[in-house]
Length: 345
Image (cartoon, rainbow, N blue to C red; front, side, top):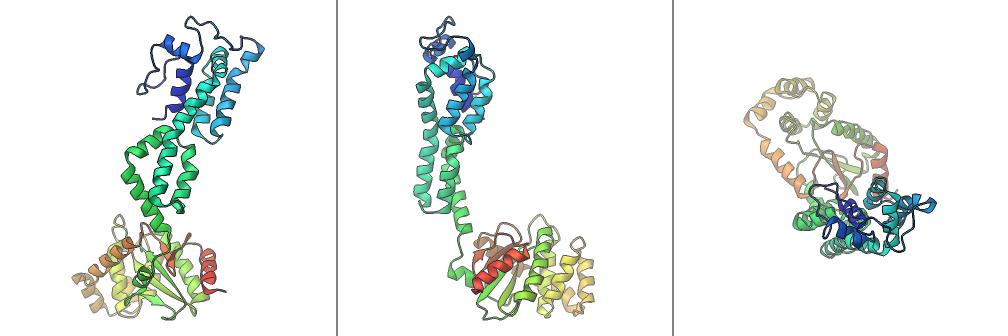
């Protein structure tokens, strides 16, 4: 629950907190008021502006000074601005009279995020993208969120390390591994550039990527090797069998024809549908049916799932160009630009 800004402000003016799980101000309400510079009996503190024309603007001034101190994008700025609408000008004037107290409280609130940032960057590496991301975002995070992340530090660090690894180009060994074997492919085997796609026949975004793939094969097929990898997602109930069927078609030299059939008919991928498409492209039906009956390619599909997980594939479609992850695999023009860059053209 985000109560840091409210806690600070209400403690400052001696009002009760509007959050049942927030800590009360030090001492009694009256004591809190005295600490904030408001007399216990409600009289103006020494040095606080008297009520009048100047006092009526004190809440806006107080909120502005807080926002100037923490930055307009910091959630504390929005929280304090909202909280001051609930306060009297006299209360805000008292806060302005001892703004050094508020400044110290803001600094204390920022320590948790600063310490978390330093610790994460030390473990992640100061030159990593994830460290830069943390440095950009942490100053605008509530102190409670930084405290929570510190309490779950090992998990937070593991997630960020995974993110860092995911966004790095693959090492040479992994690049070779995802393109190796008798997998469905198109284009020169010795091409300078290889694009590998992990896909799911039931995924609608993969259908868009398949269209992009078809366009790219036409424009770059003589210079680029295209490799298709199976990555059927667990919540797509027909995707695993469709993947097995596509490998059965690949065994008969007709993977790409079957690939196009499946993506053109994504809403009909049951066993009878798969057999229908196989017959339409002229497969040996006895061999095709036997492969599905016997689960001939089930382990191969599972192995490709495991391979995808090794290289941090978490969704489909995921594409790699010479081991570098592609940002938008469904945008043929964007992928073509990346291919041209890799080709040096």
